Length: 325
Image (cartoon, rainbow, N blue to C red; front, side, top):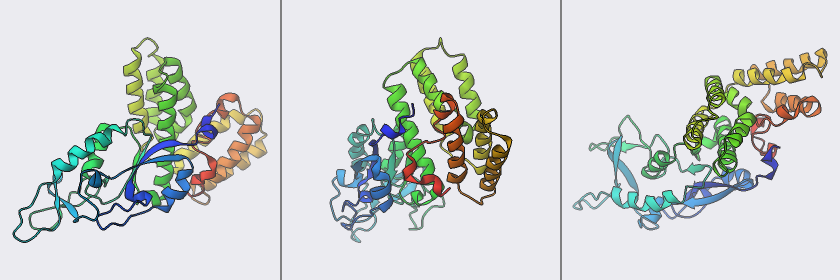
């Protein structure tokens, strides 16, 4: 059974200002309508503001990163001419530790772009001259979050405006949630096999090499110690689905799934379906068009195995994410 319809509140962390909380340096917010409206129907948000947690106050002076982009230092952007530059790094880092512990049961995180604390990437790091380095960095909290939870789906609010990145992020959040509930919370080799079986075609769409390697891993792993096996599988699985699937990869998977209809759907109908696949590959229609057609025939004529493939509905259809990719 596909539990998509039963999943209504997935725990996701989010920068407080993105949720509309007035915690920015100027006492304002950076509310995302996408996060507050569309995604909130299935995400149960937990808000975080490292700068407020560190006691910098609201409002507060603007801050920036300086020094080595690989290990930047946090300071106030402006100080009085005769005031020494104060290193704020340790103060923020200490405040991040209890926040990171709260992230243990999350299935995703949405960060504020460009923030010296929360930016996921491309955050400016300034040189002594006042000019930014060519190399960019992550915000201090964002870096600590990614280091401690390397498999956690993380995205920035700005990047979520890209339809392909948005679709991929939501898919990863649901996959992470399914793995946590179905495997990590009730670990067994059988549950791991069930999870892999339901995600086989989604894996194929994103990374054919990982699809084959994970299949081989499980084929010979029934006598291996369970905990390291689950950990190794989870690492490779989440890495494999991190990059959005291409139109060509989607077409390849849909054609594989068509093989389950060879005996039950006549050749004229199959040819019509393949024509729509080609229209999608050429960019003439979006993914929802061939997937709706394919799902119609799978629901009518497919086996229980193929109907259980989460590739067909990796998240609730009403989110409309495949309408735009």
